[in-house]
Length: 102
Image (tube, rainbow, N blue to C red):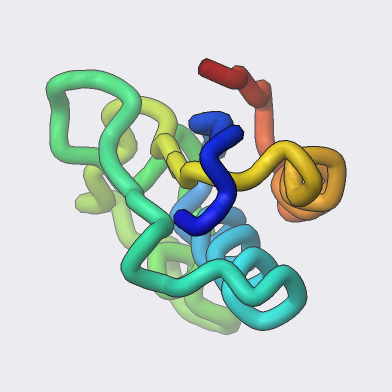
């Protein structure tokens, strides 16, 4: 980042769908390079969140029961101080359960 005053922001989400929305907003609305946004399990387990969403809940079909619902998903991104409020708002609007700054 060009700005020396960067802050690492981490947000936890319960669905992969919410994560994808959050990343889309960060990239498209706030011009954060996609390569600067990281997604990982919030714990040591492989997970798609804690709630079925998207392809795991198909319209008109039985919900899949094999989704890896082992915990929350974490999105992390380093932002400048001037971007912080907008990024926190975007993460909240996408459904972040909690947001931390480091």
